[in-house]
Figure 1 (cartoon, rainbow, N blue to C red):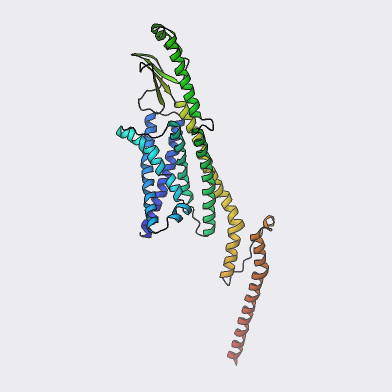
Figure 2: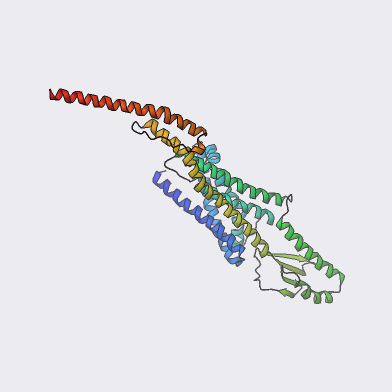
Amino acid sequence: MDKKIHDRLEQIINILIILSLFQIFIQDFFLYLRFSYRIIVLFKIISFFFDLLFTIEFLVKFIDSLKKKDFVSYFFYNNGWADFLASVPLLFFISLPVFCKEILGVNFNLLSDQMFITIESIKFFRVLKLTGKIKNPKSIMTERNITIITTTVAASVIMFFVLISFLQELQILGSPYKKLREKEIEITNNFIGLYKSMPESNFTELLDFQTKNFNNIILLRYKDKIFYNNIYELTSNDITIFIESIVKDKFEIFFTRKDFFSTIAFYRLLNFCLIFFVIFFIVVFYKRFFIESIAKPILTMKKGFEEISFIEAVKIPDKYKEDEIFVMAKNFNLRWLNAKIRKLQELKLKKTGITLINNERGRK
């Protein structure tokens, strides 16, 4: 592929990565603020196209690496694993089912609600697609080191969040979703107990009064009667609505889960900000430390070895003077640099002497 075309495609991909991260943040922000489900669906449809594009990108790089017999290098050393996690699972387990349900009217979701929330956590791996693109034209060593540090730290933070989600799915840790379901089941069993303990006419009269005690019930339908309805807009495909059908489908309870999803979105926003803060801290502060304490001394010595006229000494901070790199820099300053200065002076004197002899001969 022509280098200009390759660079242009990389620029487009970088822009798409930034836009997709912005989309992830805004979607969770709107979910946290309890925006209309239609707006959330719009962002989920946009997410589908991002996931599709990044899956295609991964497949192209995957096939290209196989052709070049360089798959191991791409997958393990050039963030290929992050490209995979940030695209394929999100497409097939998250965004594609949503797209088919909302646009095509086909429901084939293979995940439980808790697992859906768990898998969604890996979308943060998309951040790692940017960490692999940190460039430093003056120092390949700095570029590689900062990339490795940011990728390792960010991946560790993300994996911690994903691990917590999986432990909640396995019920090893307390799960917010499990607590929500237990509460919904408890409310449902209370209504079943009331239904079985009294005549139907009395049960019908009691429903309107009882449902007002439960804020997470938005509607209760018994046969053809609706006993409770609040300000929430009901839609049959709203992810924030859960319907419990009991008593042979004559009795339905519509639970709202807006508070639950708002809480989940809030924690995801915190995680998102934490990951970016970690990357920002490394790129801004650690990068400066690495350049001053490692890259700059090495580059100074390298230039001193390669260029005859370069005689700049390595600056050695007193607090780091015991570090191996500055011990070597001290030897460079005292031995190599001094020897180089003496040699340059000898060459200069020799050159001056030759010039003087030539001038004398010219006069004669």
